Image (cartoon, rainbow, N blue to C red; front, side, top):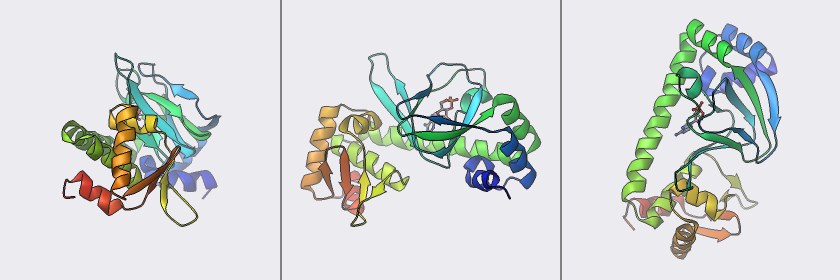
Amino acid sequence: MAELERFLAQVPLFHGAPQRALEIAAQALQPRTFAADTVFFQEGDQGEVLYVLSSGMVKLFKIDLEGHEKTLAILKPPEFFGEMALLGEQGRSATALAIRETLVYLLFKDDFQRLLKDYPSVSLNVANTLSQRLRGMVDEAQILSYKDAQGRVAYVILRLYWNGLIDFNEEGSAILRLTHQELASLAGTSRETVTRALKALEEEHVISTRPKEVLIRDPEGLEEILHGVR
Ligand code: CMP
């Protein structure tokens, strides 16, 4: 199997897809590199392309009428994004930004739709991903609507941790490399509130902070705080 096909087999869009589907996708995909801080597309744009993420990291976010940014998700390889606008008549549901230098493979709408029609496993994978994302948003809406700032920030840190969006330092501890502003955008709150909540979590010894870094010292302790049992 060619290297690209081996990679595609790891992407949730192609899990369990027949070899022929991987070959067709590999022929259709076009690689593109985006520098850090490049916008792939803006919310509302017409969508013609699905993106398969091969390296780097992508943030999907929306801006409300008052100009507040809300991050919906941060994706890492081997995920994909940009499928929603190709499935209906509406434009992009969110803005996509490369937060590191990022290599993506573009799959154009016609090729995507042909794969959906010809390979039921690919269609089921899309449905599966949409349902997981919906479930994630429902859980998040529930938690962010009733938790205090400390609980919200604990949840956001844990979700990034559970999703593997972390690095490890020399001692093997998990580190989140995000600014307070970026955490605020995930938690749907202000930077000042995040700074105060991080300080409170630090006093509980579950995290420690450095500029642009949160060291996760005690994930179980964070969960206890999230569930209000500590
Ligand atoms: P599309 O609407 O074409 O462009 C924005 C993309 O962001 C969307 O397709 C999805 O791929 C992705 N997206 C939207 N909402 C979420 C979410 N809640 N979680 C993860 N990805 C999302």
